[in-house]
Amino acid sequence: TQNPHEVARVKNLNLIQIGKHEVETWYFSPYPIEYAYLPILYICEFCLSYFPGVKQLGRHRVKCTLQHPPGNEIYRKDDISFFEIDGRKQKVYCRNLCLLSKLFLDHKTLYYDVDPFLFYVMTMRDEDGAHFIGYFSKEKESSEQYNVACILTMPQYQRMGFGRLLIAFSYELSKVEKRLGSPEKPLSDLGLLSYRAFWAETIVSLLVDQQKTGIELSIDDIANRTAFQPTDVLHTLQNLNALKYYHGQYVIVLSDTVIKNNERAMKKKKREVDPKALNWKPIH
Ligand code: ACO
Ligand code: ZN
Image (cartoon, rainbow, N blue to C red; front, side, top):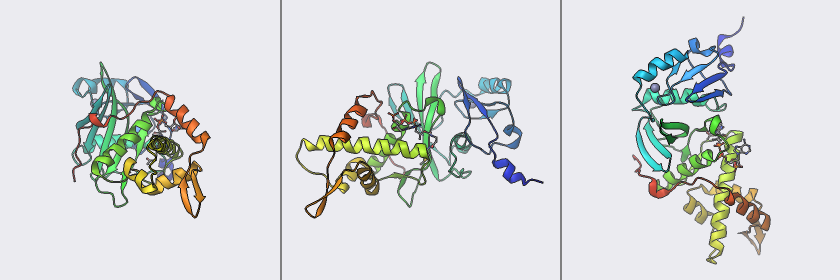
């Protein structure tokens, strides 16, 4: 006989429907067993409740009048908004969010206890409402100075710059808190790729701008301007091969290739976080 717990870890659901999108799932998520083997799980895109059929979802939508996530809208710029949701105050929503995101996150434990976390949900607005694009969670108190616990862009919106926007937003919050932050380890492969790209782009742009002033920046200076932790700055510079040992000390030198690659990356039209559109104070 098989151990039922092992069986339960095998990827169960294959397909979810959320808003206008049918999305293939990636990993196991502990939805209640009676939902686990349905051909499609139907999810309300605003409250993230789940239903076995399209009829049940339809009945729910008559009652559920939400057109955006719960919580406070702390940022709005063009069609993008961020909502801050307290795990203690919105337990059901936050648990539903964790169940949904676990479908695309393999290496993280799921937090049934959502109380210690804040959730930052990013939406894109159209005439039907504020649609869920992605989110990150953040411990209210992190002993390790993590500013992100889990981060996700829904698959139907990936590779469009939204992960970068989520990451940039997490560092804007750290700047307001006057803290240096870093994502919780381990990172997934996609998480690492996205963070590395963001760190490199931010640091290289800062250094290129700074060159015009003639004043050199240390690793700590870069950390303080970006809210990145010094180890992340150091590793990024090492990955860029930008640390040179020169006359008995390390200096930061960007190669022409690094500068050209950065110029090319910056030419792509990207959504940016506008700090002026952030209306937020830390709770502690
Ligand atoms: N292949 C290669 N490079 C990639 C890929 C990929 N599949 N995805 C992202 N990148 C790199 C690229 O450099 C990309 O820039 P480019 O598109 O201009 O080349 C850059 O990262 C940023 O890409 P975005 O479009 O901004 O990121 P996206 O919206 O796709 O979100 C994320 C990235 C959140 C990691 C997404 O892939 C995801 O949700 N994955 C599943 C969940 C996950 O693994 N989360 C991270 C776990 S770690 C943690 O939670 C702390
Ligand atoms: Zn709903």
